[in-house]
View 1 (cartoon, rainbow, N blue to C red):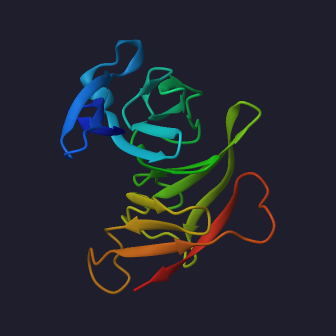
View 2 (cartoon, rainbow, N blue to C red):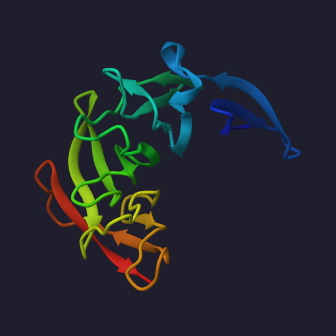
Length: 203
């Protein structure tokens, strides 16, 4: 029997596949702390190995809906909640945690409504698990710089550690809302915390 996680109406459902390929719901995971509907728990999901990231772009923090990422690790067949990922440098409308991608001990978090340096330009934050907490190590932006209303960070895909691809569906470099995908590859030496990493535009 194989276990997977699926999202249904803001609830994470753990499903088990039988030998015939059918799926049965065996557990549900709901927002913690009595979260309301507006919190949008499970707006984004990413699962790799024994680590799960669940984005809630409306999760309240100090009275503001700044967004959070809930992390879980799997051990002995059970999922245990780990440290949350939050960022004080985003605004209510940054859409932090609208996209997440797990890559081993790293989690990438999209905020496609982030306004710096331009309105709705977007950004991706790269966090690493260090000493039992998630630490911001860099910010990902396009090599050509961000543009107004680009929505960079709307979607994120990551492989086993050699590549990250970030979507910007409203990129208008060549035509309105044409969109673009940006490819990032690791550098030979680590960047200082908070230093931007720049991606190459493809297509």
